[in-house]
Picture (spheres, rainbow, N blue to C red):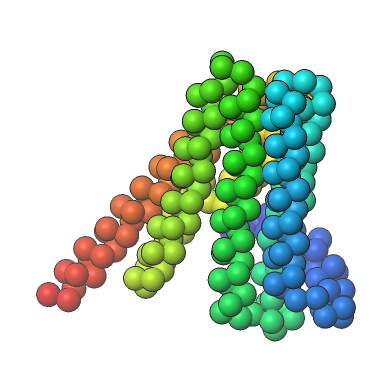
Length: 220
């Protein structure tokens, strides 16, 4: 069992009572997905307010820290919607589409907020705004390559920086920056995502190339 499966089992054990309550209250997975997205919108708003304050005041750091905490909290909804769908027998094709769509929006809006924090924090942080944009690109491309691969009937979950890792890294470094009153933890997190997410995207392209080459070879 890898670390992701272990953590998933632990979290499921914790949230299962809540899932059962949601089933009794007739709360649907699509509503849970929407609530998670709203949480990420709140996090983005906090980052935008921090950016307006210049990103390097005590109030700005407080907002950044709270933004990270809300991203982490909203991430739980991302686990609960799938669990609710399975336990409540409410899985649907549209639900999968809805979940994937709002996941992409959630990542983009939070990283956009962080990007503005850097861009408005002073000239010395300009390039970290660029790096954060690269993290946005990498995050989207990791998901896009997987979706495109699945359209070609290829399972494509390889890579180091998948969505759960990106969410945790973003949340944790924002919280640490808030406590430390320093943008460097946030900067290191964005550099990590920018590097590993883009590596993961090309890793998945290489994986698909290998699978398709083998498939084409068998068809000849």
